Image 1 (cartoon, helix red, strand yellow):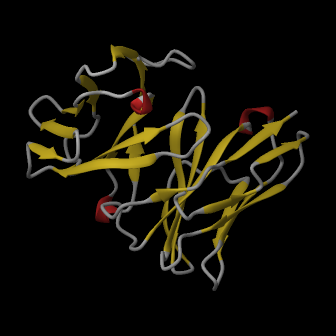
Image 2 (cartoon, rainbow over the protein chains, first blue to last red):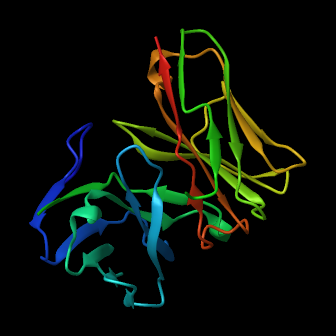
Length: 113
Length: 114
């Protein structure tokens, strides 16, 4: 759902579960997407990116899926760990020339031991 | 540690005042981005500099300005501060000017306007 103020969408999982975080992006012309992780008190940290000519990209324990038809992006985290607890943002490149990123509101992931 | 240094970490100031936030990018990075993160607006892109020149502008108010110096550090100047300017301000740096190169964020400056 949409986040309003402090009310970020929250996903609560158990340690060892797989997590899926979803993002609906806004612009059908966007051609580059990034997932960022932000831990409490820290700046956003790059996790994984994907270009619009791909449907899927895998990293270490993370997979990003892109569905351009419905403008949807997802981040899958395998074997979620307590250290994965953070706010996760998707970002899309909307501006011309790949200059700027527009961030989504974020989803909070809470991992219980 | 991302390698991006922001100072100060915290800043409390009164309405109407002016403050300067400072950012030192990672060694070798030519591009600096400034973002504002507030509870109700999320992470908003403000402005980008690349090798001393303004490269892209986002939702930056006219009361705000930035510059990038020859040594590549950047400053964000916020003037005539209002309560609504209270937020976290992040600086990020990347090697190139393109958004499809990995950007590294600093720890942020928390600005509180009272």
